[in-house]
Amino acid sequence: MSSYSLSVLNSSGAPANVAIYQTYPNLKAGLPLVWLLQTVNNGNNNTYNWTIDWALNWGTSDQPLAPGVQWSSGGPIQSMNPTAAGGNNEMGVTYTSGQFQTQPQAFNDPGVPSGSMLVTTDSTFTVAQSQAMSLAVYMNSLPAFAMQGKPNGNFLFDTHPTYWLCTTDSKQGVAVSGTFVSSPTQFAFAEGVTSLKFKLTETLQFVPM
Image (tube, rainbow, N blue to C red; front, side):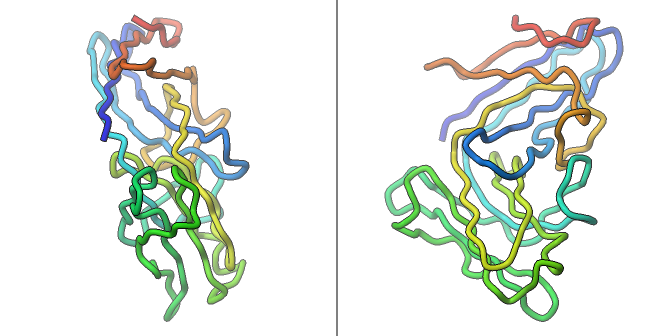
C-alpha cells in the first residue's frame, strides 16, 4: 500500500478549516464527502497523511444524499483489495427485520473488472425505505465518496480518484459540492512523488510550495 502526505502552511491571518476531498470522474453519480479535515491555526504547518487502502460500506443519513447532508457509517467496514488477483472486490446490502445489513460480506467476484469494486443490493426493500441509505467507498479507513442507495441495483466504484484541497465549514463525512467548499484546488502526485506542500494565502488561495 502506498502512503502519501500533504502539508498546509496557513498564512491567511486566521484559523482555517482545511479539508481534502475526492471526486471520481469516471462515476456518473454520487457526491464527495469531506474526507480529511483539520483546523489549521494561523502560522501553523499541518500535515495530512494517508495510505491507499480501499473499503466499502453502506451508511445512513437523515435525508437523501445531497450537499450538506452528514453521512454516517451503518454496517461493518468491508476491506477491499480490488487490484490484487483474488482480492476482495464485492459486497452486498440486504434488509432484514427493519434494518439494513451487509450480506454477503466482502468476497472476490472474478467478474468485476480489476481496479473496480461492486456493491449489490437486493429486492428486500423499497425505494422509499432506501431514501436514507447510501453506499460509500473508503480510503485510509474513512468514507470518501458516496452514492444514493436503491433496491435491486449494482453500484460500481473505481480506484481513480481526483484529489482536492479546500476550506470548508462542513464536518468530516458531510457530502459537499459547489458552495459547500471554498477555494477548491486540485492536486496530484507526480510519478515517484509522495509528499506535497501548499500555503494558504491571505486571499484564501492554495499555492504550491
